[in-house]
Length: 282
Ligand code: RP5
Image (cartoon, rainbow, N blue to C red; front, side):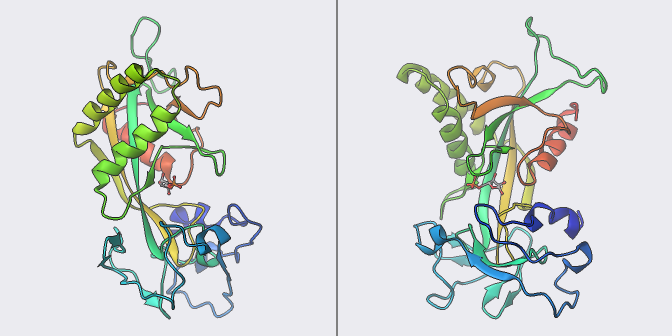
């Protein structure tokens, strides 16, 4: 993927959750190797990050992060290989975003996430798989959440805690998001928890590992993820999660996988890879 394709959402004109304008970066100026003396982005780190919650670093100067290494339990290595550090600050490996500082992200450099893509086949009332009228290919559905920060539909991913195994993050994030949406009895919850644990026991299919085109990215802080597909082929495992039942806010639901569905960050391209692997409609 070219840098301009990777940097679409990471160049959104107004930084999320603020009225801060990014310095406009045209496609041909994204690369750091293109000389651009006029480039003069604003330095912005959100007040919520500067308050230094447990998940955030301090300002550079008050501490010295060990970039490109495992820094205590904080993993500052990038899935994209070694990144450049200039004047003490890490540089976004995909190029300019029009904003300096950390914005809403806690870590200088890579901020590691994991994205569990839980899928099932779409079925009709009699349990038969549904094929798309145009492509004639079977339609997949995936568990999607509506993000509170921007209202966009997304894979229920989340940040990897320091020292946490990605396999654990995938299951923890999915369980939190899916279970929180349910108005289920403690017994039902236990049953669901078991089914999730069963599905996540398999290694899953690794869909993607690397940089994410996230609107929160800056020149010095960016999102990276490991996206893994867990597929309920037979439809008798997590497929039966009653996600919409009792969920009036509609925050979590099964959504048809289709190229026309807008999704957060790079999530649409992850789903496209899943459809190729499963020979499903896109
Ligand atoms: C995206 O941000 C990742 O793909 C992941 O889905 C998400 C993690 O951030 P939070 O949901 O924890 O804000 O870039």
